Length: 309
Image 1 (tube, rainbow, N blue to C red):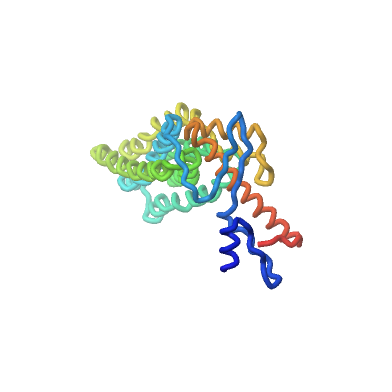
Image 2 (spheres, rainbow, N blue to C red):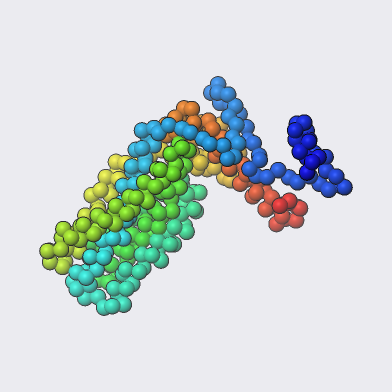
């Protein structure tokens, strides 16, 4: 320990003794230097270093879009608490059918969340958000026009896939486009919006409680379709793509090319500001390089190439 401390103070590496190999550097000790682009100085990322960034309008617009969708997802969870009784009376559900109609959403949304990573790898974050919005709207429309338990079940399944996909993709997407100093606050907006959506579902039940059974529960299912259409047609097309996906769309095993880096940096400039774009890009490249290294080592291990852990 004394030898290592003295060597560190002198700016030299400690020499291993007794034939023992020196320990490899820890992951948080690796420094990644990103080649300069567009005349900028080299950007160096050191893990654990605080990163700033200013909150840009494009980032606020994207977070607002995703948060509105989060409120719609929360509405779907909360609205059935009041819609179940008139729905069951209108379509004459028995106890088992009521339980399945309510509980199937949780199982299906879990499947949607588990498949989110695959869709993200293939299509990107924005297309995943668009798919989640479309599935949600389609499911609510099927529910609103249902005439039997089978149609209600189908609507809940389709809607559940959208709910699970949205819950898995949207928080990660917000984190990937947000300035580092604002990530926690902006990701929390998604969680807060879910709870606001839950409350809006309860308020909608209260507002329509005096209607007859059929128009009451069908109206509750139709209410979110208008804001969902606005989100899908007007807001989602304006979302910037995730810079992380832009850098990895050629595959985890390949270094990102100049075009991918330029596209990712453009997004970061629009969402994080010019000053934070370089360090944020270096941070993403550091993580992706570490993932590529681990993937290569795992393949070497599987093929008997003696990959080191």
